[in-house]
Length: 315
Image (cartoon, rainbow, N blue to C red; front, side, top):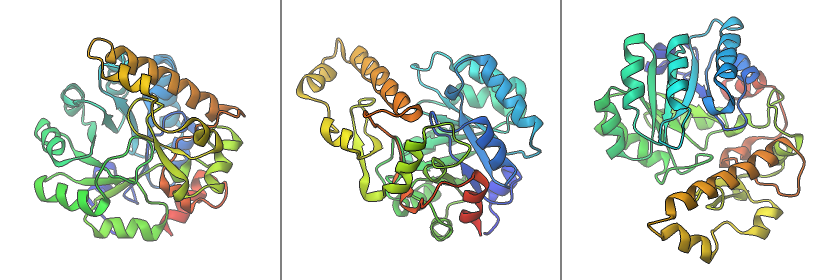
């Protein structure tokens, strides 16, 4: 695997980031990934309190020597914990931050002086140019094959586009679950990859065995978009429960979502209810199986350790 600017930025052997996955990524997975020569990023929101976040960062540091420790911050107004999360990350000196769903301005301003790298999720050229102007160190190019909230462009479209109009490294996110897939993306001009869904079915994840096994049993053709979780299209496994309940909002939900006076509150309620359903399905056995995943589970054939998954991706 060829060396890229990402290897240098994070001082890692392989230009791969274990992507931050809501509810899935945990401290143990982070430690295993960092000790396997890749970078890794965990959502700050996976830790309920600031104390838990601090403890996790300190535990990861105590058990690794890697410079690839990343934290994912949701930077829009819905994340009321963001200011404290950013303060904690800056104080403890994480290696990089991935920003999602908003402007990274405050994050870049606080992290730059401390030498903390900032990578920004983008789905189009316009926003990529904006974050580069703000001082971002790299772009996370979220393509149409990503798990969760995916982009609209294919890797073949977005990677050359961002390389043409931006001068900072482009990290591809979405759709890769094999070494051949990694090489293909690198040949398109990506400086690295952010890989998430192949790690859902890892031994270290604290999610239910049913969720892990679903990633083994289902494939890319079983991934569908639903607006029922957050109001915004999100990828889930097309389980019998998803098929029964449908993947689009009903006429009343759509009507309320368009009402200027209440749409903000409707979206908040939809998101809260949706996340509770996803959380319940992730950690316990329930007939309401709403499992988030991306098309790259196609390549998940068994439940393995984090180290074994990385070995499969790199050798």
